[in-house]
Amino acid sequence: MDLKNLVTCRLNSPGDSIVATGVPPHISILQHMHSLAKNVNDVVPQIQKVAPDVIRGVIDEIEKRAMTAGTVTRDGLEALINGCLEKSGLYQLVQKLEDSPTSGIQQEETLTGDEAVTMTHMVGMHSWGGRLHLVPQDFAFPNSWSQIAWQYWMCGDRQKQYPPLRILSKNDMSNTNMQKRLSDFRYLMQLVEKRVEEKGKWIAHPSIEQANEMFEAGKDVLDISEVSEKGRKRRGEQMKWSTMVNRVRNKRKTQRFS
Image 1 (cartoon, rainbow, N blue to C red):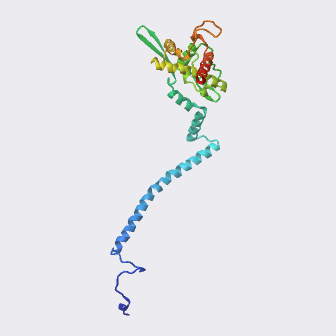
Image 2 (image 1 turned 90 degrees about the horizontal axis):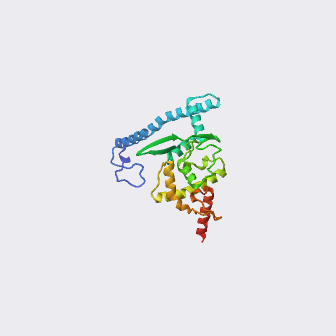
Image 3 (image 1 turned 90 degrees about the vertical axis):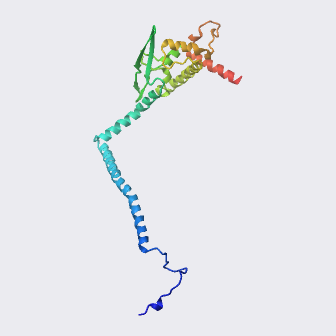
């Protein structure tokens, strides 16, 4: 059969099913092979990741079933202990001690001549309410003069193993009334703190004597009167801190609205 009559020589026309590109067929095949190779390379890491994920999932499921059945496993026991410690507040307590100005250590300095002897002791820990606290459940703020309250604020109580009260938080208080007392105590003491810092007399870890000197430098912010409301003369620093905080707040409130 003569095929010559079926062949037409012409340029490309719109609608032709075959388009002449001038590119040899093997070049196009190589491009497709390169694309497939790239896709395979992208898939291989995902395939390699499947095995560890499956193994970890199987181990986790075994751990869950072991715990349900009451069987103790290493990972299960570790997770249980960590959960209990976190629930008890130990991690938060450690973080609080690390972030506190004293880092959980109370320091006292006793000067003998030119030599200073520094004594440090760990603050006692107290367990109640399912958590660890810096003070016992029956802790009470000192019913004392403002100066003595300042000593507790800066130095704590070594005999009772109380830390400086300035590092306590509301979580260390046993009830809402004690939280309110802490708020009042902190309000008054921080006024003195600010004034001491303004005068450049601040000492981070003072002895009792140094704390007294700091109080002398900052007590003027409390505007302590030497004469009581009944006309009795008394030393201002011997006014109870609970009385002083009310006097200071009332005076500042009056000044604000006057």
